[in-house]
Amino acid sequence: MIIGGLQKFSLLDYPGLMSAIIFTKGCNFRCHFCYNPMLVWPDNGGRKLKYSLSHKSEKKEKDHFKVDENGLFLFLKERAGKLDAVVITGGEPTIHNDLPEFIKKIKDLGYLIKLDTNGTNPDMLKVLIKEGLIDYIAMDIKGSLENYKKITGVEVDIEKIKKSIKLIMDSGKKIPYEFRTTIMPDLLDKDDIEEIAKIIEGAQRWYLQNFKSNLDLVNMEFKGKKAYNNKRMNILRDIALKYINICELR
Image (cartoon, rainbow, N blue to C red; front, side, top):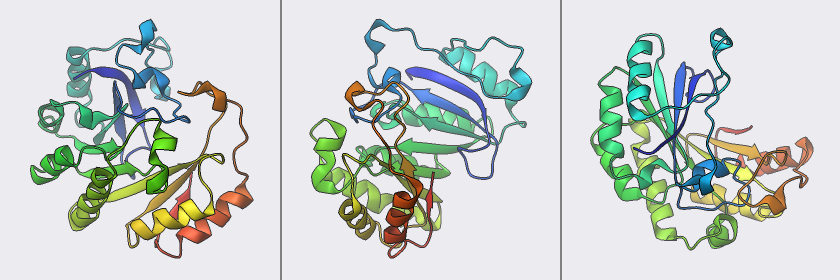
């Protein structure tokens, strides 16, 4: 596995549980608003990637550190029984063929697994679901289906996106899941939200995430652009709630 980073502790990323977050490196999208550009390109353009800590008890450690797979599993073995879960995010984890084997090694240590994905590899998702390797799924839906290329910066097989949505929703009786959409004013409007809502009508939960413009982005032309205010975000949420029982803002 190509590991891009490790966050040792989070109370937010796996609902209700204490988790560590593993960032895989490399992504098949180039979303303009992505604020993890260092994880998008596998070679990182020659820049060295840093790995941040967030656990208060670790403040005495260095603010940044490097990790390889051996170091990662040493850390996970040491924290077994103290942490509940591991979140695997990216980048895009499902582009890595060794993802099932990687997850198996983590689950053998007793951890629950949450997977973050962009939904471009339904075949991988099907394997992970069938083999019982994931306990929670979060899929990003980038926008209305006709606007995927504009948002992601690449050609997208929309049928794969639709297939992943169906796989996730069909697995909902066994595996809790969420959908997420980042709201970038230049790329999404009320009509897009309604179209997405219709596609995932009846889903367990959907989070609308406001665009962050104060960070390094994949497309730096978007840095500093104005995000929607709370009033506008709540209008979008109200539209979503016509189709989804639980829709919250982040």
